[in-house]
Image 1 (cartoon, helix red, strand yellow):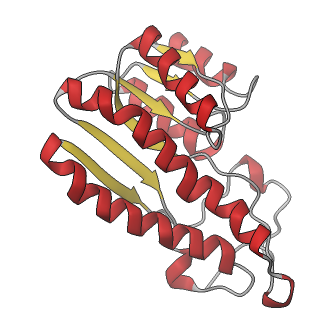
Image 2 (image 1 turned 180 degrees about the vertical axis):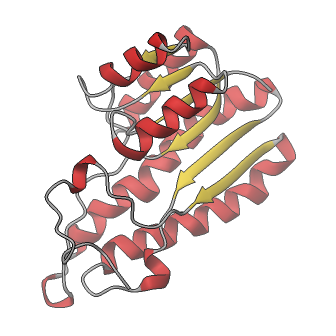
Image 3 (image 1 turned 180 degrees about the horizontal axis):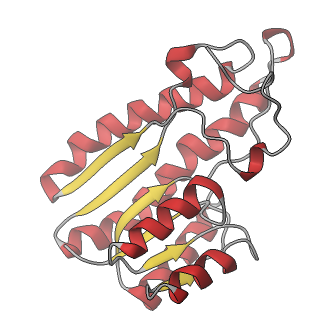
Length: 200
């Protein structure tokens, strides 16, 4: 199994660290983020002797995902490793203010996007003889913090689909896993005070 690594939401934070680490381990890396956000990460990887390309695109849009994976395949080869890390706004919304729209905002990134991405890369992984799909999960479903029900529900759904995919795709040599780190303060949390940080 060879191929390239595609890391979504990799222009900063955890995604950038993942992209740099994969490149350091010899993977050609497609660094996905919104336009203009991935340039510095790609420059860092290339300066360190790795191979990387900017791969902009909205990973919640089906046409964009198809275009993105096609472009990555043309530049770096089939995707052998997918890290679905991209996320959107994560508002704290209490029960009284919760709406279906709030839920949809989280499901877009943690159910729809991983589904679109996996369906786009799996044919290439099968041609390679196997692959790796890694969803970035969360410990929030277990922590059950007030105000985080929409986020936690979407992350729980992500875990469930990952478990089913692991059984469905394993016969093709494709492993599907969730990595669920705790809260990691990155650039998006620059304005979060110690008092406001998620805690048990």
